[in-house]
Length: 424
Ligand code: CMC
Image (cartoon, rainbow, N blue to C red; front, top):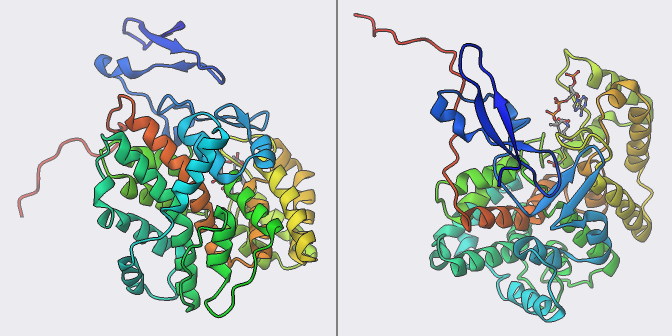
């Protein structure tokens, strides 16, 4: 499969020949696996130039602002598809036929409830715990409840686990919210679509069941679609790494949730709103921009910049449009949105941001929409985790279905050489 060859010349040693592969899209990749037998490792902290796997799921061209799932542009999926169809596409590689879609939707609906005992588990948490802390614990604990789908070498077990995770994540997310709000948990309703059902479980109470607005359900669904997968990001790589040891899928997804929580990754949507609160008024933008540019200040403009996109994040464009639709439907004139727009305008015209290719990312707008939908800030990353679940599972499944090795990076050791324990 090697299309070309590369030569590595290390001073004083014979040249080492390395195979070079070309993917269907993207840069060529030098296969450095043979270096171990030459006694040499590569050094790439943060995986800036390392492909950790071969994958057929998602492609990103960060310079052009392109995101494809199984070849389909994210803009087309956001406009023409829905979340469960996107899940099917990510998991199976092709869009479903009408019959396959109906079957898949029904299968997901048949798994939306969680084990009753999980409620007791939830009761162990403080009510003021961060929802992501509860989410990590509850999703990890699913492996204690669903013993019948833990054999990772059995494709049927893997499929049932995937269905369970996609189906139960909204139920768990809403349970976590209701728990913190001190309200009774709402059971899922199988007559509703995935996103309607999520909004129902979040906002209805046993005392009052209100119909779910189709515009808001569509916006929720689009938020899930836009978060569904994003190639080998930190949380997906964490899921793959955890999975490479043979850990069960629920444990792997819990590991992904933990990695997503950080403010440099999924936690950024929450951080954007906190930042906008802190900025408070358009008149303060300049001082915050100055802080973001100051190398001695750890402050970064949340919702700006991306490891891969060095152009506009294509998800951000769709998110911005959805943002307008939601605010229009709800008749909200949000001063925070105005602040965000002004911040975006000022940052985009500032040479610091232009030179570093720092553009608004998906999290810059998602927080504003989620806030308009009435979702509390602490729940934003939980929503991201719910949307990202099919991507995590698709990558985990792709790895397990093919030959793989336990993920085990090497290091450049710069500590002490061997020394003797002192006589005391
Ligand atoms: N505000 C100010 N300066 C920034 C920002 C920012 N948001 N992001 C990057 N920079 C600067 C950085 O200081 C560096 O400057 P210099 O070259 O002078 O040292 C340069 O831009 C390159 O940045 P980097 O940190 O080397 O880039 P990275 O690829 O390692 O980090 C990032 C990417 C997303 C972690 C970073 O841009 C960041 O922390 N952004 C804010 C958090 C955020 O919005 N995260 C959400 C990412 S999208 C959702 C997801 O997919 O998880």
